[in-house]
Each structure stands twice: as structure tokens, then as C-alpha cells.
Image 1 (tube, rainbow, N blue to C red):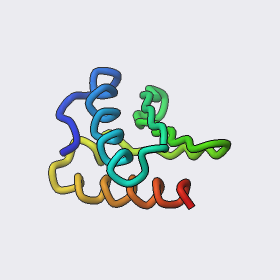
Image 2: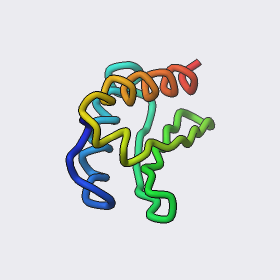
Image 3: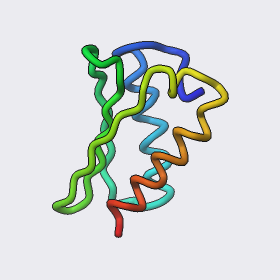
Image 4: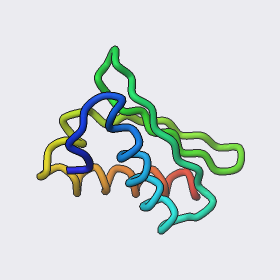
Length: 84
């Protein structure tokens, strides 16, 4: 589980988690998160130099303990994509 909070209350925890992972892989990747209430998803924004990558994680993904590894794998893959 990335966080047990919901909605906007979870954004800071998800962002902190995502920044830790991105710093470990590539310290030049800037990471931010916002909550999209219309789709009940968290939008993660990765930026490096002129490249920007946006992707979403659902509330179910970040709040289910068994899916934390899945979320981490997705995030790491996206970081590697933007870093290359």
C-alpha cells in the first residue's frame, strides 16, 4: 500500500513515495502528483529536461497492500523511459 488515505489527502504521501523512487533511479527527474477527482486517479508528472511524461494510478492501486509492488514497477518503468 502506497497510502491508506484517499483523494487529495493522499497526494503528499504518494508524491513523497514517488520522489524517493525517482531520486534513487535518476536524480534529475522532477516528480509531482495531483488528484483528479473526476476519474478518481492520481496523475503523476515526471519531467526531465524538455521531456514530460504523465500517467495515472488509480485509487485502488495505491490503496491495496498487494499492489504496491505493481505501482513501484510502473513508476520505475516510466522513470527509465523518460531518462533514456
